[in-house]
Image 1 (cartoon, helix red, strand yellow):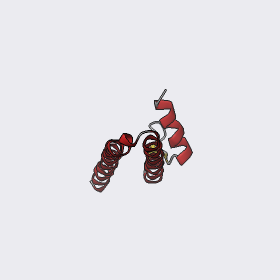
Image 2 (cartoon, one colour):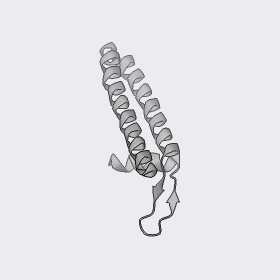
Image 3 (spheres, helix red, strand yellow):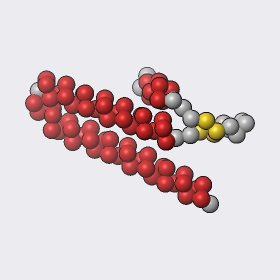
Length: 89
């Protein structure tokens, strides 16, 4: 039971961070984009930094379990980053 509670807490934390990230994107865009080119550049830089922090946190706090053998493993920051890139194709 403790494991299920831990999983629910983990999912809640992940979803909370993603929601805050989306709010940050929208609020930052509304604040920086009216300033023109430099505002867009600042918004993009802050967005990339926030995305790197989100991916870094997820890589450190997540572990996965193989469906075939049951082995538990973690994925590195760079593997997480490359998987985000695969989703954007």
